[in-house]
Length: 187
Image (cartoon, rainbow, N blue to C red; front, side):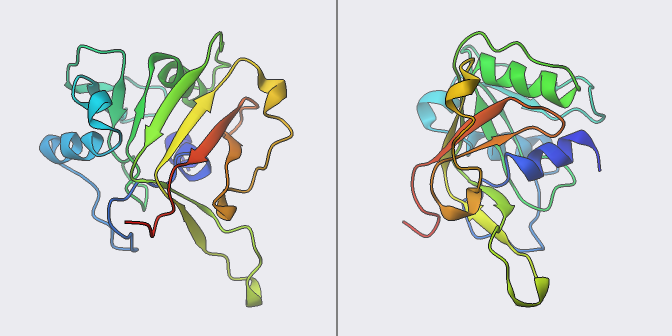
């Protein structure tokens, strides 16, 4: 499984404005990708954000879908992933993601912030009868990366409780805080 898919599974799983199913149609055209990326955060972030498309290969270049004028960057769903999970990232969080996905250790020198208004999908941690494991939809949330990693290390790591938790990129040790801002079923 490529690094981008693993990253999404482990961390940025799911920002769906509507309920997700196995038949989720991910954005394919540039117009669909732009519309999807714009769903990822609040209007005060998305209106002037640069919109990028994921690289076609791990460590590849991100393609500009729309040039913005602010420090924010939004991306649509990750191609090949079963859930639609767009996100918006400030410059620090975006650099951290790009370095991590490229297999590099990112230098975090200040707090970074990200939005995932469509939510994310994480493995359900509770054991189900017969060993069947399902997924839990983390509703809309904000994520924070910090240079003060020691403050996050003892926090909850189970995203399926609905409570704030920490996660990390695959093959990386830096954790980030995920703070749900409402339950998925809330309207």
